[in-house]
Length: 457
Image 1 (tube, rainbow, N blue to C red):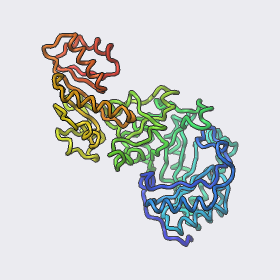
Image 2: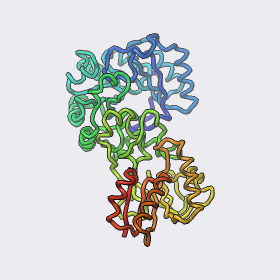
Image 3: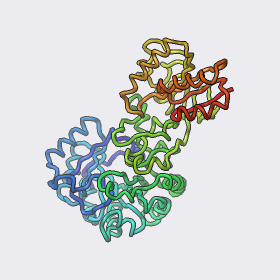
Image 4: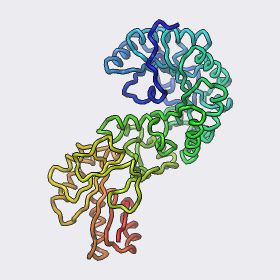
């Protein structure tokens, strides 16, 4: 029995819920598998193990920052048995309540699992890549890895270690997640959580892009798996290295790490700051959930053109005829009343801007500006220009969307086109024109294809 106090009782989603309370140490970058999709391949790092004093410093830093979970990873940390056991003991002795092992499990025997549990290990994150032996071995880059992984899982569960499985969905397995869950329920009934990752176009995967899944095929499989998991009593989790909300997770934001992190803070919960490796694209511009999702990997847009990405809930300005999900957005005529926890989309609805309003907007919890613009209102136009300049330096996913409403009654076709060009020049995302003739729609769409247009009678 472990000499350390039992860890806090947490549901799987709670244990996963925030990177803000997690710390990571890598004992070694050497690995006994050669996954063709690995995004931290051994060949990119020194072979020497991480010095123990460095690891001790990382543990101390985690505790100083209020961290609760130490993740021990690699490479493959089980290659260094004595060092792994010592690291677990030191972390628990220092006061870390949750110590997690990331592993492929193929070296874990019953006695090894028992020793880790005795040292204080609380959970394991195991890369059972597929329930199909051939697929698992292909993705692990090692023949015979499948039965050894299962044996390691059996040992961990028998030792009382909580296990989360991590299937990394790839092109060969992109439609098989429901079958994977059925296998887990039958063969590994002690496993109650599955964290669904997908091959990222990084590391070795850059040379194996045929493994990159198509989100258009993956989305339906994930949505089917959501219902099946609930019936089987298995909790599906969407980690940071998982999928955009529209790929099966729009109705499970409480189990999506990005959505949870965005909801609890960061940039006034406008969005998650991950624009260096993920980004939003054209399908995300009308999404009411864009502030809860970082989008897709930058390379996915390049390699797949955004296939399978489509707004599951569309944001609609206050005056729109289009129905919008009432739980996804709120509208206020007063900027100061908007709170970051109101909804993913938060409209400031106003008829004019005063000097300083651009700065107030950018410092507020508002995610979107709905402006009933009078083109003759010079003060408002000046403030819109200020907003445009201020947002030019920001990542697109962190900018406030701007939707303009203009009454074109009494204007001829040329004047309406000029007003639309004005909206585009002001970096408006969308434009509603009241009183514009329907026949103008095609001319406007051809002239300004990036502007979302709505014509009202």
